[in-house]
Amino acid sequence: MARNQRQSGFPELRHRHPWDVSPKEAIAIQQRLCRFIRTDQRCPEPATVAGIDVGFEDEGRVTRAAVAVLEFPSLQPLETAIANIETRFPYIPGLLSFREIPAVLAAMDKLQQTPDLLLCDGQGFAHPRRFGLACHLGLWLGLPAIGVAKTRLVGVHGKLPVRKGVWTPLLDGEEVLGAVLCTRTWVKPVYVSAGHRITLEQSIHYVLACTTRYRLPETTRLAHRLASAA
Image 1: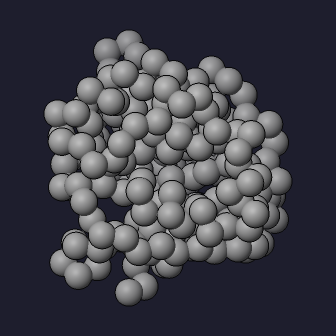
Image 2: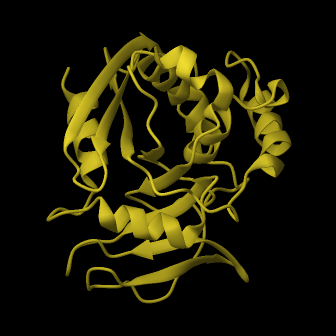
């Protein structure tokens, strides 16, 4: 059912590419596709949100992707899916989408319904080529997506926020890449950036709306447990 439901949302074929590529080819793909990313487009209010996370088994030889779909705004779990595939791309910071997304797509294909909004454990626009995992996955599926990372990949920021709901911009010169967002008072912040078909302001709003008493959104927490449970 999920495959048929997603057909109308597929982006144009020019956004598609092979996954079995070299690191040099992967960078060229990112440079070609980044111009199609929309971070100035508002996302409609979602009825469902999904957490995306990826783990590895067998000393990295198997990629394990998990998708957890929750009702919004209640955050009640609705559906989960897991996929294990052979790892075919090396670990290279800035190119993790090529290592992880093939397994994510296999997990997404098992869902009965397509979620309205994706919260990805990784970067979105806050990426050296402005094309992190959330951008890549959102563009590939034609869905709004947000990057929620635990660590910073690029950019600089001011003093870290320490009160829930407070954020400071993540900058590259004068360009705003994302937000350093405090999701729990006196706990390390997360790095939020728009992925595709959503604004930064909305990204911050939905990350906070999906966060309860923990540092990470419930979407990410549930997907992480599934991806890590070998």
